[in-house]
Image 1 (cartoon, helix red, strand yellow):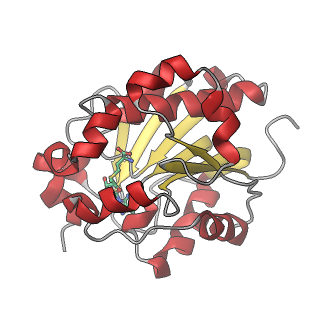
Image 2: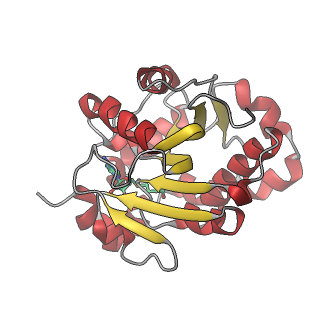
Length: 234
Ligand SMILES: C[S@@+](CC[C@H](N)C(=O)[O-])C[C@H]1O[C@@H](n2cnc3c(N)ncnc32)[C@H](O)[C@@H]1O
């Protein structure tokens, strides 16, 4: 059976549209990808890690927008996805199709940093741990795996997910589930950081208020950065 996103690919951006989401993001998806890339760069900066030495893989990379934002900041970037159609417009970045939803088409210990952004809520709960173990397999010791997910504690997020056709199969994950998945594949996961409190037009004016709010479980999305010991500094 063809992956579900093969059929959604040609109208993907239209199917994501929602009046609240559009107003929050300032009309398109660029703000959401940029916000995630800033969050990731801030994480490594705070850890004292120079990302220009690191190899980065985005699992479930879709149209490759986050890869595009982060490409200048990493030594090597790559993407994989179960849907070849979603990735077919990506240029200048290595991509591989996952023939199987729970296997990653790379050898072990290949990447220093791996993301899965808004992917897990499309995966059946029974398959989530198997995929996480595969991701941990291709992550180098000391590497970081980040899961970004919609925040099920935020009622506006839940409303948008409920009425967005792309998300008709979505089963949202609480941060506690993400923590259990990370622990289940031997990764060390600190508490989640919540973000997307302020819309694009206010975000720049609010300075670092969003990072102060990151412990409050009300942002539109959250991220869990987990490490495969030893830590990147060791
Ligand atoms: C909502 S899109 C998100 C795309 C991208 N990460 C982003 O944030 O723009 C979800 C993506 O996850 C992919 N996907 C679904 N199940 C997957 C799996 N088991 N492994 C890898 N990718 C998967 C879909 O094909 C789709 O491209």
